[in-house]
Image (tube, rainbow, N blue to C red; front, top):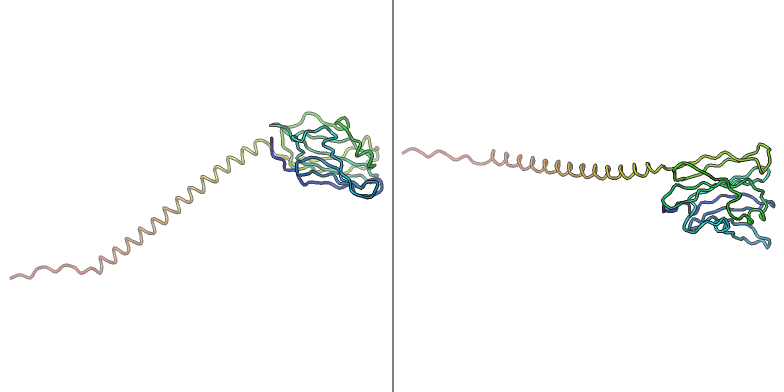
Length: 203
């Protein structure tokens, strides 16, 4: 299973009382909703559990946006074993805390066949065309990685390592050539200053 990269990601919207609500991924990649409870304290709802997602299937990334009328849009990518990520698009919902915390199962999501991709980031706009919270859907853009990109990265990593080894070898060769040249120069200097043998004097 691909390693979860979504931990720590979050998106903030407002509830019907204009209090902040935060959709966030915990250290295990589980989707949680943090909201202000009736007693004024922060409370946490495990949405991954409500949706029926296994802890072994973390969420890679998420995005949420909100219209001026309070309608909330939520999109996230769920990791799957040795498969592409599965994109889930929640139907537009109201900003009432009761609606957000009563979500259960995946009946309120739109999903289906998609490309064989791993989704790195979701860019999500708001939607204010006035057609109502059950009909309006925002434009979204996916930033993704192809499986081929991972293979390309591994190939380039191997190539770069080999290139460095070649460069290191050439540098060693250049150093050896310099040492040999210096030694040869010293030898020539020595020969030039070496006293030449004198011929024997004739008797």
